[in-house]
Amino acid sequence: MRLENKVACVTGAASGIGKAIAESYIKEGAKVMFSDVNDFDVSSLGDSAAFTKCDVSDSKQVDALVAATVEKFGKIDIMVNDAGIGTQGGVLETTDEVWHKTIEINLSGVFYGTRAAGRWMKENNIAGSIINMSSILGEVGLQGSIAYCATKGGVVQVTHAAALDLATVKIRVNAIAPGFIETGMTKDVLANADFNKMIVAGTPLGHVGLPQDIANAALYLASDESNYVTGEVIFVDGGWRAR
Image (cartoon, rainbow, N blue to C red):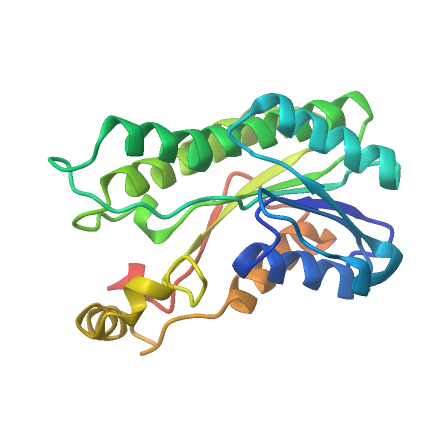
């Protein structure tokens, strides 16, 4: 078991990538606090799973989530800041409301989770792992997605800076940058035949990815196998960035 005796908290865990990560952690021996803005029934997963509702755009709720994880399982070794939204709109069309909402969830939520988990880990001498969810669109642009691209680029920089801040206390901070993955968030855009064709043509491996592809990377970053890895962004994108 790669995560035996570990405790993890995963935001955005009710569906898609977050759910795949949380379930993979349980299979590898971890106890996991699932969290999402939507309710999620973890009863079928046994004593190794619990659920706390949390809106990551509210720092107090994120602080309470970390506290609930520690109260339930005694500690926190792994924090996965996966919760996010996909928004569309170019620079001329994006409203203030969409801009601020995207930043509050996708960027501020990652900062709040990194800060809350990092504080607890430091205070309790836990050499933990914090994993943030960026995107290939944090490095390359996509027409009509300015707010999303901006926030995912910000996640990369939060990851780099936090990794330097926390390295002295042996807390590792890394990010995963998925390519186009089949999830509820991408369902509508991937259902567009022209867009789907463009994505497949632009992906050297010739297909979109699955949530488990990202969960596999998150499992590596959570495990002791990555003990010498911090401040990195792992691209899981079918070769998109290499073009």
